[in-house]
View 1 (cartoon, rainbow, N blue to C red):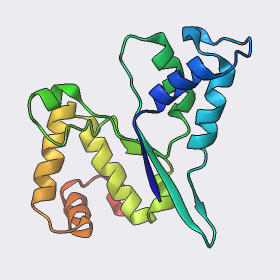
View 2 (view 1 turned 180 degrees about the vertical axis):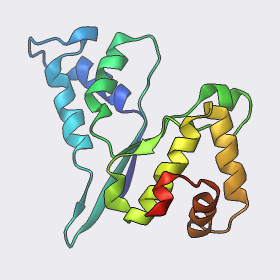
View 3 (view 1 turned 120 degrees about the vertical axis):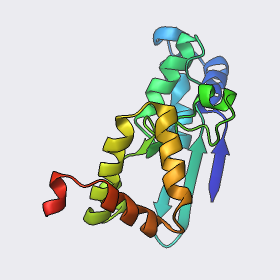
View 4 (view 1 turned 180 degrees about the horizontal axis):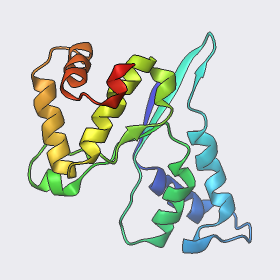
Length: 168
């Protein structure tokens, strides 16, 4: 099952308004007890042995100028498995998907892929991190268009990004 939540920040705000006051107020005016129910909900995402899985995809409001939004975001930032950072400047230029591939990423990649694949992905990340976000996305899209599968894409990356790690 997949749950789409737009947004974890708004959910935190709603609980902050509705929850009984605990007396402990975080910066930004957030009651510490107000974040417990959203954290419990967000923590429900898991792979259940012999029972399927629950995946929660949640958005978070950032750069709104609200200290409360920042506090709520920081409370949840470390709990996700990945971050997909959207880029307003790219969207305004009609460059889609408007994703900042430099700032986006998956935590614990080493669990998701083998060591050879992981090394290629890390090489790709080093190349992308040397570029501005728009140039990185354009390069990534250009390289992906020239391949038919992830394996073919990664093999192409391995061939075109030689370095000291290749001697292994």
